[in-house]
Image (cartoon, rainbow, N blue to C red; front, top):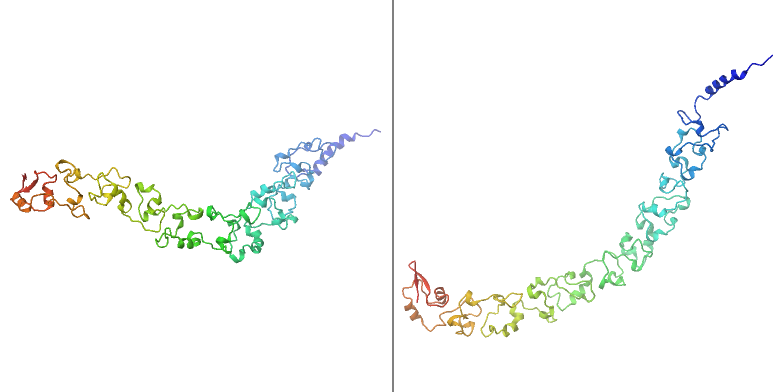
Length: 428
């Protein structure tokens, strides 16, 4: 008797059993990746010779060490939808939450070793500059050996409180020094002392470029004043050329002096408070007037300094003609010439016509030499009052005085004009 062909009968049954026992993929519901992308007929184990699944299209592309890790390390249940993409989801936080959950801030998938600590610090609240660049991490992060980098303060004193308290030269605590170390010490300096002190809040230049801090601070570095006179009051009081105190020169030394040693040169920019320097006075040397003696108060009138110029001038002869000593009546401060005073065109002609040379001094006409607005006509002429009274009989407004003479005879001629009965009358 022949056996029946069971293979034809059993095959549909096996297919039925397979679909009944494994109705879903072991990789989770809705998993649509074809089996042959990872498996072959050799078995269900991942066949890397045919592996073609593109993991880079997922939320976590494989790079660095992730390329060689066994799938089950990240997908222990093989249900791929359960996998998470955060570093801490797979990796234990060795820093105990002291640096945050974003491992990528410091690490890469290539290695756990951090090769750019300084660059990372530049993006933090405290960039590493100067000696901090080479300092050991544990110097600031006390638990660095445990891989814990607790948050630190970014002010100098947060780490250097001990240095501050122990410093005795000068004693920071007793002197009440500011705890803002940067006021005196630059962050890029490798030492606390010497020329690295940052004194930019009061530049130490020229005369202030001293090596002994105590010469200004007197072992007391707190609340040192920055105005000149606070340190230089004695210099002010002792100066006699000129005598600053007697002349009540302001104590704002910078008005005249720089920080140059010896107080020189002095510019005395406030000279106009005492005597306005204009014109030629702007460019002359101080000693031309002061003759290197600044303690004597100088006159403020022109002739007080220019008496010699006045005496030596002979065109015209100022002294013999008894010109007024108020130089500004004719001259300005820019130069002696040209002078603006022209007696003939502005006033009575004395240099032209028949009166040229008939006078000897200004006092011939200006009898009051202290006031040249006063002049006399009647003292220069041979006629007398009786003759003049008779000659001007009937002339309205006539009076025997110099002002009346000048009113009718402004040029000295005999054809003067006077108003009489609202009519103009010519005088001989």
